[in-house]
Amino acid sequence: MELLAARPLADRAVTFELATEVGAEAAARVGAAQARLSALLEAGELPGALELSRAFCAITLHYDPLEGRQAGLVARVRAALEDTEPAAATGGRLWRLPCLYEGEDLDDLSTRLGMARDEITARHAATEHLVHAIGFLPGLPFMGGLPDGFSVPRRETPRTRVPQGSVAIANGLTVIYPFESPGGWHILGRCPVPLFDAARDAPALLSAGDRVRFAPVDRPEFDRLAAAHAAGTADPETYAEAAT
Amino acid sequence: MSARLVLTRAGARSLLQDTGFRGGRGTGVPAAGALDRDALYLLNRLLGNAPDAAAIEAALMPPALRAEGGAVRLALGPGLAGQVSGDNPRPVGAWTAFTLHPGETLALKLDPGCPVALIGIGGAIALPRALGSHATLARAGLGPFGRALGDGDAIPLEAAATDPGDTTFAAPPSPATGPIRAVPGPQAEWFTEDAMATFFGTDYTVGAETDRMGMRLEGPKLAHSERGADIVSDGIAPGAVQVPGSGQPIVLLADAQTTGGYPKIATVIGADLPRLARLAPGDSLRFEAVTVEQAEDAARARRAELDRIAQAIVPANAGRIDPRALWRANLAGQAVDALCPDHFAAHPEPEDRP
Image (cartoon, rainbow over all chains, first blue to last red; front, side):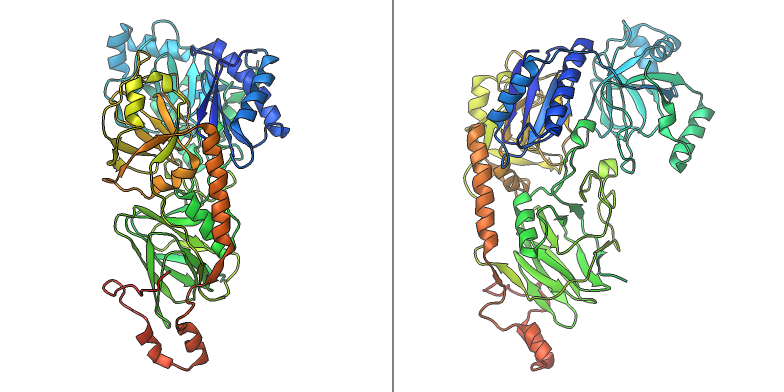
């Protein structure tokens, strides 16, 4: 694939732009490039490289300027990508995450989208969401694949406090807020599963390339699950199914 | 019970920080870590630590510290002055390593206009690491305490410290001057030529809404090109200067989110990031454009300079009486008190403070 641009973040990092539009095609390019660059990094073939982070259309490579030069890294990455083909995600896990569809913005969304609350939640729950990237907050998944008719920009006035676990949509994507945070997305519901736990070997539950389906739960079930996770008696891994 | 450093008063925002988390950016975890990496590096060299050892980053109102269960070796970063109380009251200055003995208490003061400063801790900290680090990211509960240090928190050490006397650098670093250097981009094309010229040619003022995530700058509005003020979110590194629709730039710092959707006009070079840590709201700054190669050369030159400074560690009290030595020799008895200011809040600093 072609490297569209290498954009420097001074002497700390460089962003490799691989696509221009968010979607499954971009995810395939970024996913394949990430796999290739991770392998090179692991093999020590990117001098000075420290770690990679993945966004929708680009990968950012962080490096130590005392150990390597950006010009050399860009040349190696450009050459490596030339013989790397885009590939739809393979090996990602399928998650069935519980969701209490009683979000603060359902009525507002019903008006904006011209769709009944029940239809919004039913169609959202019937969708398989693809995790494009983890970012913004530790463990926060940006997921694509919203059904037609769900197109809505961010709220004009962001909330100063979006509750932990909020499942929210904007710009054709769904996110789950792993922590309370300011945020401008429209809240559909609440997921009781902790998405980031520093005590786990892999603190972030989800990875780019994973797929997520939301399983509607009622208030008593949500409360029961939230309490079980808070007490450490429920294992978030049980929501994952083998890839199909 | 082994040696531990106790915060008898936590201060306004005292955080355990080191060189930051490793390998977490792909899952939304910023590196975090100390804002002033040059000071962290030098303090760790002064203490004989590994270069990535953790220190306490204090802000606005520093903590009060006590050694319990054994002596603890400490070193004060630039902007801090301390007073030890106990059997051997004495002042300690910036860039000084000293041993806090069990029962002694250290009171600290931040220089006016200095927003944050580091307190280096000698020896190995006996706390678990997350993502290879003792750093703190409170909003994700990451770090040994998962939050700012509180009153009574104790930092346990693997072993009690010895007391080789107070030490300092023969030639501590002098504060850098001149513009803050930055590399244009990653999204230079999202700005008009006028905006680029303004950014690299006008004074900006540090805004009040500044924290470890970012530093808001106030100054002339920067106009976006026809590409607009939104991009597809991409990666961020500390130093990136994002410009939202308001046209007022924000320099992203250690705790900034790992991806962002605003165009970034430029990125402050690594060698000048520590200088941002020393700027307080109301201070002014100006940017100068450099290339990636120049930024890399500056990083290497800075490391060489720090290593030169770290090579010459000398006794801190050269040329004056060492009250502790007198105390130990039992020559001076209580007269020792007369040699040291013991109510430092009102007492002038000794003129030979390093």
